[in-house]
Image 1 (tube, rainbow, N blue to C red):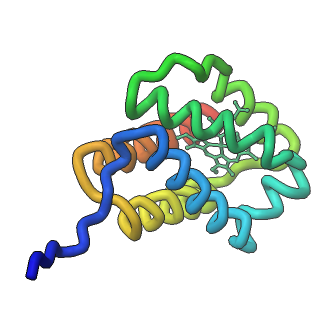
Image 2: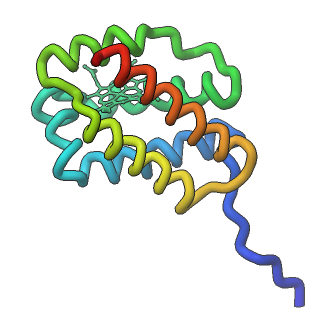
Length: 128
Ligand code: HEM
């Protein structure tokens, strides 16, 4: 018999990154702390928002160039409508990290968590 241990994929292709973003948003939109920020405050349209987020992570992890928007300004505007507090960043990061760890493993998966932690820290600091 040719048994292989179940191995989690890495975040090393657009296909995997897109599936990751879908998993991550399913959690965020089911989260009672974060969902209202997306649904009631920003009123995102998933068909518009998710492709941006997918391009963003393909840029950070694969070097794709499709994403070219000012993420910091977008959160600054959001922050003016509804303050993003440290607990929101903690929750965002906890869901991000748990989603990565539940489904993915490898160099890029580790990098995604480091990059997310660092950007979340910078964002929280600069919105202060
Ligand atoms: C407190 C934590 C966070 C919350 C509640 C949050 C929420 C949101 C919301 C509601 C939007 C949509 C804004 C709009 O279209 O008007 C948005 C956009 C975005 N978020 Fe966050 N965010 C958080 C942290 C982060 C972090 C740490 C990153 C990156 C590591 C990130 C990446 C993005 C990107 C790339 C967009 C822009 C998509 C576009 O280009 O339209 N977010 N976020």
